[in-house]
Length: 460
Image (tube, rainbow, N blue to C red; front, side):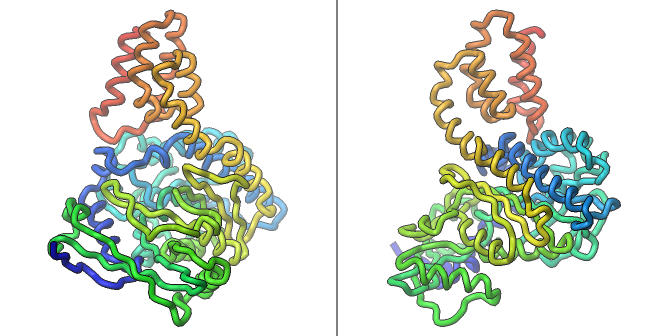
């Protein structure tokens, strides 16, 4: 069959793949999550929100302790901003606000205003957040705002929807806390090969079984094929010297390797370094690599399709950039198999990040999101054999995760029907907690309907 060349010999970060990605989200908006096409359970659950909340709290303790000694400037009249990039379904933000705010409001530094800003590049998604009643109390309190932020058009004025403020490096003086959760895997990146000790750019050619005039055609992935060809580099590839230094070190240390390079992700980090007088806490989670050995024997980067697509993230390169920029990288000493979780600090390091490091070690190293996912994959295979108390314990451990509840619901219902009424009070409390922690994406929401039906059947 004749193949049509859609584009030839392009750097991966400049490929039409990313236009296809953007077209998908612009066309589908919230339906990407409402129809459960784009996976989000692993990245937007209560355990992840609790982990981020603990790390943020540790960083704030460092900031306020350093501010008391005069070593760290905080403007009490400006909020400290927590900015989530590509907030998508909004569920991570909702879980975070529920977990973080009650604790913050009882803290010694509660007088310092704080604000959570959800961003995306799709206007329809912002409209959904704005109209979701679950967010309204936070909006009314001035704690939550929204903004259109496009990683490919970073210099466009960034205006907050509710306050009307222009969010810019000139106006934001306090440190910024940046959450890039399952973000770097879905934005442009480059591909390189080290072949017999020689660094090569891995150029991409796209072919299809037919001409492709409409990149928004949802069936396009059924026809596309990706072909890579390594081309030796004769000079430094990027204008940013640190990027080239990292590539040079890969060339020197890895005789044979195939790896991605998060150039657009790093450009985004550099953009956010301009805010808050250069003081930035970056929290990020994704599937990816944190060790250089993981870059050996990798295949050419191929999209993991789920309506949109994602690629593995080279967190080792991101960590190298942070370290070489004088920043702090928090990582666990063990291998994270399901999801990588990192915290990095750039700019002035309050208290040498003592509390931040400790919070990270506790929240991620001692039973964090990766550990919970590993446990969940085992436990969910045992749902049919679990007792009602065991279900309640696991739901409690999950932070009342609605996705866990949804998956175990048929077996959970059977155990309720068999249970002594003495357990009904705990069951009702669990159902109320799940309902409160859950952010519905449609009305009526099937899960809310099921919870209401169970409460009616129990009669409490």
